[in-house]
Length: 414
Length: 116
Image 1 (cartoon, chains in turn cyan, blue):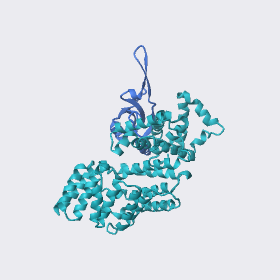
Image 2: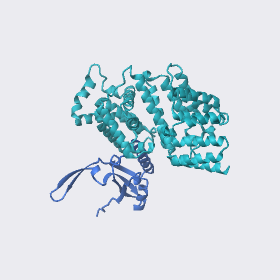
Image 3: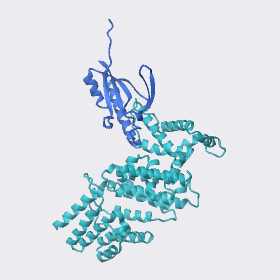
Image 4: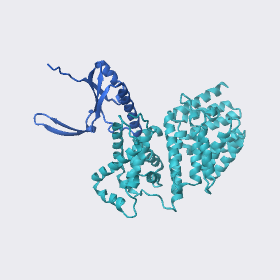
């Protein structure tokens, strides 16, 4: 017997592939039946592969899903004609070809465009993408996004309903709509990544999975010629740069480690290299995006041999550029931190005073944290402590709370 | 050496709502267990059972169709193993991967009839 190991996440990734192919055949209206059917195939594999894992597990899934199609055909009578069209229509792609690598990727990309359709609500888009393409269960999505499982189920139902009601097609967007549609796809991918990167989720594994999924989706997007552009390469570069630091962001007790105290020797430099290559490719295209600027900022941090060696001046310029195209409060907040690093405290304060904290929503605590940083910088420790107290009160998550409490306690000693 | 049957009782994976990732993980554990038993030469054979259940009961031979989802627990499969005694057989059953899901293993010795 061959003691063969399966590729990590094979089942999860196959789930997305199979659901996508079957949706291409049966249509989005049958999505629920399809997802159940695919789930059944996995249950079968789980039992069947206990004694012997097939030589080519992916091929096994392909065959199993094909057979499942035929099973489904018998059950969903109405779709008999559709399958005939796909198999025998003169211009249509043949049934068997649908299971070839290129066509599988094509189906997955259609699913990504469906999930990120502008007619769906953003929050629903993320849940739906993680479920149908990512192969995460609703419980896993809930755990990853720190939501209740019922909330995720509601979002999934709402997404499916919207797809049916708004008659969204399982197709690539037309050429003139492609740039805009691609933009919303990349944004959802970016949000999925941020959920992993910034969430301060207790489990590093969960964070890695979300970040890994975002990277996988971006790679998939870049596999198709028409979807390659400066923006998509820049997003890939940005995600690589951030991912390189992921492991050093928390310590063994799941406590946050800020940039200043991260072990720079543990940053994962092969990913930095991959990011650099992506940024070079991005430069071959004329389109320019906020991802370019954000990637440049991340690259500056990675370049610095130590926190003290950071080129804050360059980073400030990049933030100023970013603010011109995306004037958001979170960008202003980051900029004020950079200004404090540069000892431009007065300028930092002006920005902070003009911020609308309500726009920061659950991240309001960050504002109070930066206020504390400002007062510490000008030597008013007592005020700094006061602001940290407010930050501690407002912070929604325990990991970050512990971090702030430690920070405050260190200040009190001063 | 005596023959023992390890009978697996509990819920089906699909009814427990396991995700693809979790199923892969479970499968890996079953695979490792099976490989270990084969290496030790203790496993004779085993089968997994389909989740559809048809029960026939009573003098009228009443037939009821059930699915695993409706039943609290069903027999999901079995292994036939060789072991010195019941304790040794239970030791083999320690590696059953699904205790954490609330599933159980029933260990039974196969009855041997003497030929008089």
